[in-house]
Image (cartoon, rainbow, N blue to C red; front, top):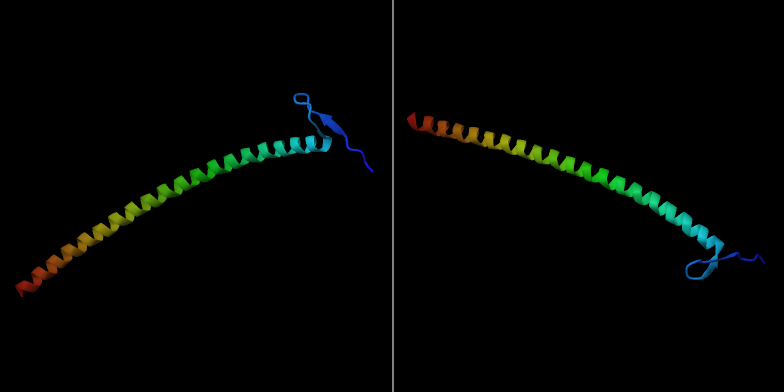
Length: 88
């Protein structure tokens, strides 16, 4: 049977296995590393979303203006057609 190496906490005196201490250190290091990467990715994703929203908003305005112009042209054309129809 393999004996377990115990470590005593200098602050509280609790004993725990050396492997637990090493595991905790590794977990914390990995957690910090990936937390930072996640923050960077979230920032990039937010910037991309904001850029796409701005592009979409611009396209909507352009399309709205185009449709309004077409509607106005159509209305003017209808007035001319109606006017011409009454004179003949």
